[in-house]
Picture 1 (tube, rainbow, N blue to C red):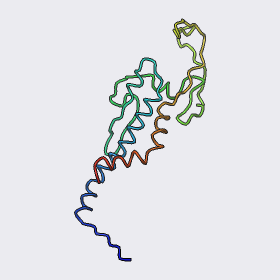
Picture 2 (tube, rainbow, N blue to C red; picture 1 turned 90 degrees about the vertical axis):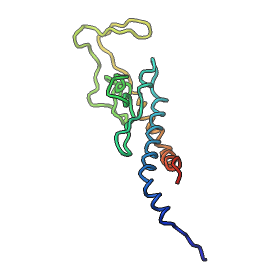
Picture 3 (spheres, rainbow, N blue to C red; picture 1 turned 180 degrees about the vertical axis):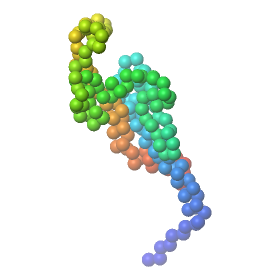
Picture 4 (tube, helix red, strand yellow; picture 1 turned 120 degrees about the horizontal axis):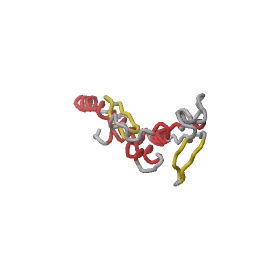
Length: 159
């Protein structure tokens, strides 16, 4: 068999010079897929939480995805409570019960007073809210297709 492969040095140099850019674009594609998944699975009340989820470039090939990622301001200051739950229903990122689970009691008053579903409630304590893990679900959804997302970063700049 007489197969030959011809490689031009100029093509290898061009490929090597553009490799960091291609890797960065591939990682960025995965980050934006995580953002899209988190937005899709985030709970919606008024839309503040969903609209606060963003991607921020942290450095070379390094991205942060999360609520309020665009700035240091609080767009949805309750985001952590939605992700991990509260009180007796609190969980860690992996969905395991936290060792500090407890009922929620008022700090300075005799009763917790709040409005929910159009009704005012007065209770001595509450169990809390269950974890929704919208960020984790978004990440897991994106990671299923991460090889495709990463390779799209290479195709988008042309090899």
